Length: 191
Length: 191
DNA sequence: CGCGTGAGAATGAACGTTCACTCATTAACT
DNA sequence: AGTTAATGAGTGAACGTTCATTCTCACGCG
Image (cartoon, rainbow over all chains, first blue to last red; front, side):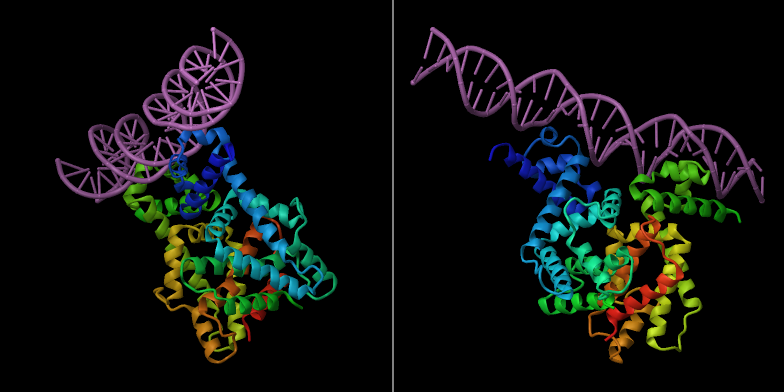
């Protein structure tokens, strides 16, 4: 609770500002002010804005992955595991809208491209629960015979769009709707 | 072929630069250079960068809508009309990747939010072929009973993701795959 | 116990760069 | 000759980053 205190404050301030305003409207000076430190102080903890952005992303990703792993029904059928993943991710983002906004920014930036490439090529460090489902689903002929990128898009594309709509109040994602939506996603990929 | 000449050049240069680099890495000076005019000249045709960006978007949207209307099978069943729309849009973007990249940039920016809001509320100027399909589909009980925003996400979310993957060479969208994908989208929304 | 000291932490003014936009000047056209 | 179009150096604002300076505080010494 010494150095990590300021480090935390800076990361939290950066998260909020970037999630709400985007990378370009989140100047270091403002991040510093929000974190209650001087501008120069940030550079004691992060060598550049880029590094701060990347570290923040990695931290969020780890946290989300941990949440998804937690109650993951490993032994259960594919369909159930798939529905679980989509549902829990939606719930997580609804509870943590800033996290969603941040990840979205990151994804829609040059950073996001290489991240996505690694994921599709299976090069992400931790083993990837979702890609595993796709592999098994194709093998067991439960899923349509699509490249993984296509399955990924059919499953995640709608989710991202819907979270956006939810955050901007174009729609209210309640439990009933979430259930129906996850099943609609399943309809799209199941054989 | 007088004023419109330079106007065209400027819009084309802006389209290319913004599509490839994003709004922030497309300085007016560079747009001017690419268009073969001086920086100040742009302001004879567009009162600000914002206006240029908005005009460019409107033009692309009009063009895309015109293409979609062209062979639109008005009299045919809902399913056929839906598949047509998704397929033709995919084809259009594959043929005009810069247009896709630009629209994507625009959508993932503050501009995009209000645009999307208007669309969901049916406030876009021209009547909206896709939203019509959703209205009719719900009425005729062919589609799942979702809010239009949800149907929209299920239909378009995957498409946007896939175009991204296609443009970055993570996937090759050939005719066979496009057919299967559009049908998978239909599976997601059909009752 | 009080005090001086030194090293690490923090500061914020200043710097260099980038960018959208302006405008006095020049060129082109009628 | 006069009107419109085009130019591009210049302006000021915004930003990421630096660094000389100040602050903090644990520790050793008298």
